[in-house]
Image: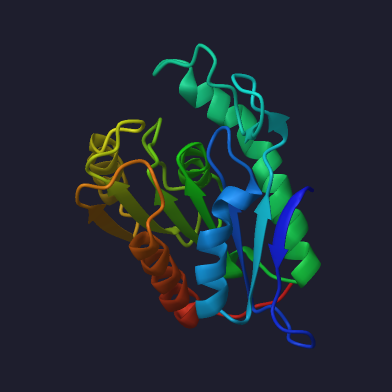
Length: 217
């Protein structure tokens, strides 16, 4: 895996794991600000930021979880589902590295990474905590994981890349499926991760891990 890894202080065992998934055309470095905020709040948490496995095919640099060349509302879900096993493999590898079960794993994605993160909620071995910044869902979530992941959604009202309406669509779907949910609207914000969002994500994971059981594998 290429990317970034932020670990607890030497001699300190990681009590939880958060994986960050960047957007299309980005790389691990584009998530470093969020990683640093998380690191400052969750001092006993390993934060892993992988580069996506494929080079961005519509630009000279960056990576992608799936190609957006010719993507439509009809074929987007299939592309996301094809990318899921790679991400699940990364999560499993890192969880095993630190001896953690899925109850101690969180995932946060931005844009395309957020679409992947939200799609993980529909998997039997879903991470316990999932945060999405400027994401969208492509299918109605089903009740497969037990317990259900806790979901955090945040989106800017001025987002011109992934419309703000995607937040309400996702929130409605997750609420109807009885997923625990927090939604945060960012007024007049575009397609970025703001410092306020980063702090809100850190608070979400801090509260979540505080109340989650610590069962090692």
